[in-house]
Length: 397
Image (tube, rainbow, N blue to C red):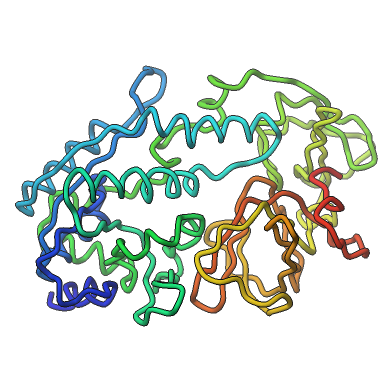
């Protein structure tokens, strides 16, 4: 078990400061529990901080906040560390949830987890841990790493060793200054190793299932949940050629590439192949659909971003890099083009399916995460003209 302590130290640039107090985001899950365990074994003083970021104000959906807190308390007692509590529900609603609602109403598909990391975990949580609890650092159970050598830009965010769990994608928009006060003890381990370590240490939550829900909202039926906040706005479902083939309930409830739940019955004039959402035309309140998993309307040669949040100095234009347009996607090679407003166009070497406005473009150089931004628009693979300005891209067919 000595290797667990080494893992924590390898992710820290402060190996001589084991007397430092590290405040761990203790969520009740096994990852944060092992994070705290490894830091204790590495010699740090450790405290847990449980965040409540969503008020349990409904009875229609199961919310696990009470169960999560109980699990976090059991872990803290088992490890002999104090557990603090903080409620950021009002700030979460203002900074994350309301923004997500606005994006959905505008026909885009936001990523609340990225917003939550930027505005809550690596802002409010960090400041509370340092200023109110007196911590020297924070630590989270993210599967990500920090570069051992500090470059002139400061600590560098790296992919987690376990590519199936690598969570650097969700950290791409945080303030880079926060990395100097952050530890990622799990980044050099696989999920299987973490689970085995929890069992060996007899952590009370060692067999607890992983959470897969939206950040702090939980594991709910997303469409049903959002219908409580967004009014249905029915409109036509159209083919790319403009043929009416059905009715949708509101553009906010669909995402690009979606196949299920379209309600398109048999069409005498069309083959029996599945239909997929290819675009949203907000001017017509129309959902555009096509047949075929790899229809040209679903494929993009490039995406244009909002202004990028850089974690390190931007590389020269034309540098071959990798990027992801969704979590757990393999890095896709391409080149970057900069624009005066801070946005970029990323040109991919191979077609990208269902690049979705509102989701994040995250840029990598090898294992290093350089930064990211929300996708503003796309250039279809069958469009030959290379855009010179972001305005020439479009969200609709």
